[in-house]
Image 1: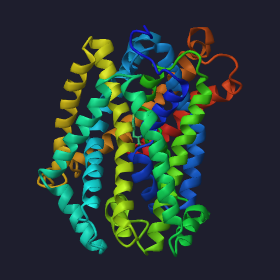
Image 2: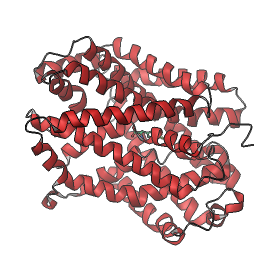
Image 3: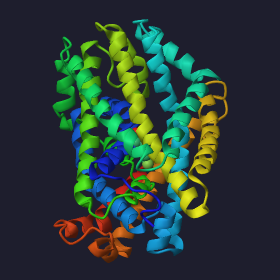
Length: 443
Ligand code: PFF
């Protein structure tokens, strides 16, 4: 089974691909503005706490389910236990479908902004003018949809070539490029006059700022950022060779994801402070404030273009994993050819993204429970479906299939894993309880 559906040829290839899924808009666009909105260093500390307990545990759970199940999320649950557990897999495929529909819209913005920076359109300087330009761009009925289509075509083109050729080769090239670009931009940012205030904001905690909303945001973002709760890592896990040490791989992916998020913090926050912008500007921080920052820098258009190319690359490698969940389901369970599956899923996801994009402009009057289509898709996926998936994945591993998951002869983790006892407690009790708390507070 494993041979016929392709595998990652090297351990490093797998780790880079899984890290490519984890590192995306969540790290570079969302994380810095969440830190900015939630008071800086305290948010960072809480986020790191969640990442290395619950996040790491659920990632290991997904890798193990994937490698033993040797299938997409639906097939893996059906194979390991079946019955109602299969529904967790279906929910994951559905979640991937929904997330990619709006993720691709934002991915399209990054491509558009790379072009806009390169052509000097954004050297307006004044944040107000850049804010208006951003609002006009995302509200346009044609331009962002064109870039959304372009983003989906790029994603589909890589996924159509299959695991081991397409995804692995792309990640082997793209991930190191991404890392180098981030480091270069960080050096530029932290050497700006006045950057020290941003570094202090990011690193010096003020514990009086702790509040429940911030804790919930940190846990929710840990899930989103690590690509957990919908089976992306189950799908990638199904392509890992038996020789790979799963706990070590999970630690690597988690650490790389965190490293990139922290680098993004060092890129964005010092620059924001150096130029006197508001770190709490929210989701517009990247698309509105940073171009203004870049426009006031020497070689700003160059650094700005690099930045948006980098964000586009990160978004693409995450989008590939979202599409792969849906495609591997169609290939394994429905017997479709990979290319046909990519075409069908890609087209449907593109179409679902269209109302998301339009809801930020001409369709803004059309709301469900007070939210536009884009916000509904994001809310449903991030605040409801991912946490729910995370609860079931933890319970499944902790209570239902633990011996099988540990059985090294069968593709399981194997008994050289020293932390198995602690991990089991987290899967059984800690993770489900904490995630349930997020879900209930979110609703
Ligand atoms: N982890 C990605 C990011 O941080 O941008 C988003 C994501 C990808 C979420 C894949 C879920 C997923 F399955």
